[in-house]
Image: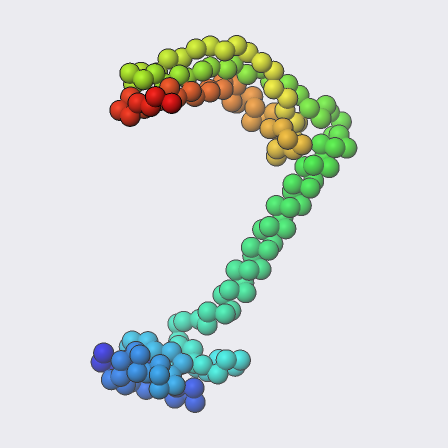
Length: 161
């Protein structure tokens, strides 16, 4: 490979006609094509290129942002749980939604038969997020139909047992 910029640990930057493997075996920190300027990193001793950033500095910022997001979501969930548990603002902790149930039976001839199974009440929590094993009421009110799929078998591969 021609025209590689080889940056050595002593901080010198120059072009070399070595291959990437030969340059790395020879003690170079990094090998990049067509680079003319570099600066030494204060901790690692390897060089930085103008317009590029060292990989370690970006990782720390990403980890910090992810930690902040996870902590904010945890605080939101805890606040929602305490609001439901302590009834703040005053309200019923749980509600009820009527759900219509259907069976979707896939027949062996490839057709699907729909059977109405009836209505039943589902308990839901008056909260923003699912709490105490119950869906939030705002979600349950929007999903009032439940479909249970029953497969009678594959028509192309029948089984006896």
